[in-house]
Image (cartoon, rainbow, N blue to C red; front, side, top):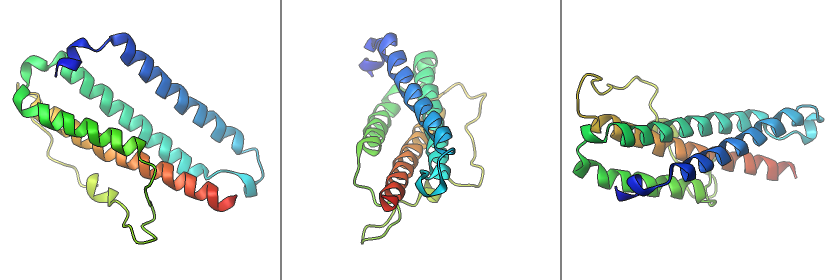
Length: 165
């Protein structure tokens, strides 16, 4: 938890800006690709899905940072230290791992993403409850699931590009 206090706001902003710039470049490249013949176009629908999940993940991570900075006094710090560290490790692993098999072919089953983000509305934490710990834990879980989706989306795009080449 010490890293939250000592982390430079400038470092956070620069990292966030870098991610948004990369996503913006992806959006622009996707738009330009639509002018190309269909045979050489990248998988635009998959790229749009990747972009959407990436923006959702960024939103969750920003909300987590805000909760940690603004609602720290309303959290049970002993209950969130381990989930926070675990979520950070899982998200980092999901966003840096390149050996995913999204289609589930070749012996390794794909991650069941539908189970990680259910379509049925969940019971949300009470907004009037003073303890913000349940809200943070919920956002951590959503971030982990979204990181897996970003990973799987990117692998699907790469697989599609490799089959066209």
